Length: 376
Image 1 (cartoon, rainbow, N blue to C red):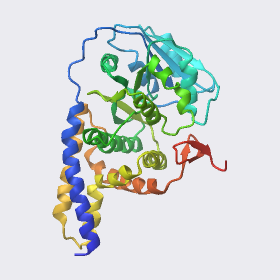
Image 2 (image 1 turned 90 degrees about the vertical axis):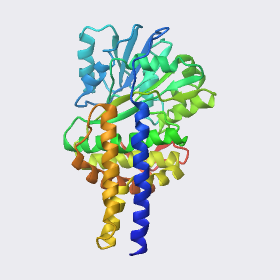
Image 3 (image 1 turned 180 degrees about the vertical axis):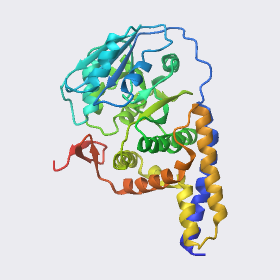
Image 4 (image 1 turned 90 degrees about the horizontal axis):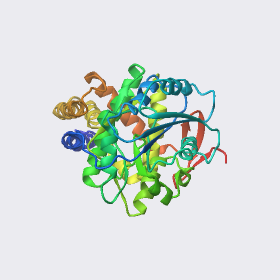
């Protein structure tokens, strides 16, 4: 048997062990009963919006349909008054709700990161003691605020973030993207948290007290960062406070309508992770046992098929476990193999990407994580 095939089989076997371990560790984030709250402070939820999405109105509405006794303010920001996202917000403003909903249209720019500029404009419109930042494509359960506020109220906690699963909102390609989130990204974070390798702070949720946000210099501190979510978490940790991930999983709606969009998005994502943790990124290559085993069998002329069977079993086990914990299947079983092959390809592309496509603009990534337009 060729040396290359042996190496591929070894990588696949290590990856099988990883997948079986991940299937166990994701269970730590299955939510239990919703906590009782001692206090229910006012909460401002900041939603930076850009363009329309298939389930935007429903995603936003999920933050209003909360079993939370305190006052809730939903602030939705757009930079262009003609942004189609405004229509979804207008429908929420008109609907009866215990929460207040405000659309903020402000074109003020505060750095190279358009999302952070939006957040700076939104933060100026609230005096709530508790701030939650969440991406527009996130949907949550009715007990979301109870769980977030309870976690943030614990001693020594400076911020709360959440694991998330994928949900395809725009057909086949969006399902493919969702599978990558649910069956690769989320388990990787769960394993990273268990081993101490991961220190996440994710756009699905970043909840922090207003005093903590002021202490780190506000959102302006990350106005030129590509990985603004990660940078906010690092800033909170630098104050001596922790960033915690409670046992709950929110939903990320994927809206990719073509393979090209999936690839562009994931190369940008991978390049961002590589820039933050190069060694960890290279090590994450072991998480693709199925394509490694498939390549090994091809090089070995059919030998080693047992490794391929084990790799398939490991991936199916992880998928079924994630579906059980989250209560929903992000993609059909047959999609695992094409999904894993695509993931390995975008992983390799992420090793070499030095600029990214972001909302139609081509931006260069600096070594410190900062963004600049190509040519500057």
